[in-house]
Amino acid sequence: MEKINIAVDGFSSCGKSTIAKGLAKELGYTYIDSGAMYRAIALFAYRNGWMTDTDINEAELQQHVSEIEISFKANAQGQQVTYLNGENVEKEIRSLEIGNMASRVSTLGFVRRELVRQQQAMGKRKGVVMDGRDIGTVVFPDAELKIFLTASPQVRAQRRFDELQAKGIAVSYEDTLANVRERDERDTTRAESPLRKAEDAIELDNSRITIDEQLQWAIDMFNKITKKNE
Ligand code: DC
Image (cartoon, rainbow, N blue to C red; front, side, top):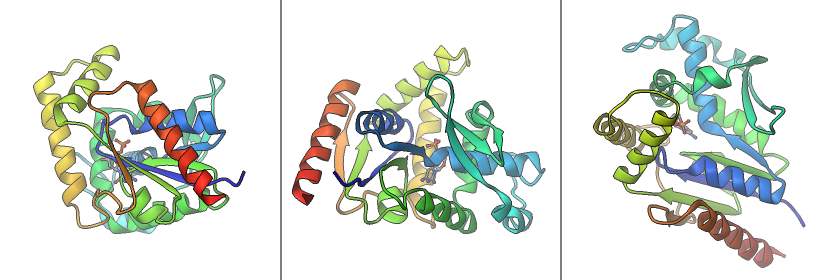
């Protein structure tokens, strides 16, 4: 059977990576976490002193953005690990600080253009499940299957809060909810590729369904689409 590309978009903490990874495993496809790429750029800018909590030296970052090469490799446990110019940065990019910086660098047009170029190259041979915010609208507008995930801000904040607690990071539920709302606002209102559902995407609100139910739903969608294309 010919391979297709699958786009999974949605708000932060919606469980995009869970469904995208599960689908990739089930189908034998490559999973690509596009958010990790924005996080790697933020780390690069931060390490070079071009980014602080309040400012970005856009001129320096723009001059050096084409020197940034991001790749993914599986570790011994089969989990995907992010590499920045050959260095494993998986742990560093997952901090809350880098997440917030990633949200800020992702508003810059030249950063988005460079990453979209790298993401499109990764999907050239198909067989990719990529999750993010603009995959169905900008990166793979021709993706055969587009999924748009939603869940209420309260459900997403609770999931994020549980995740952080499990990692031993002390935060309050109220602060987590405020952070979810802040990121939603930034992701949907930015001038460059704001988060929105592609017209041909299928929406799934996963506030009240289990991970297994979501995965089964996604596999059913995949089967329906690939059958139709046969
Ligand atoms: O999904 P995430 O939290 O790892 O993403 C980090 C930031 O990058 C997030 O604030 C939104 C941004 N992002 C984006 O603008 N476009 C993408 N395709 C993926 C992530």
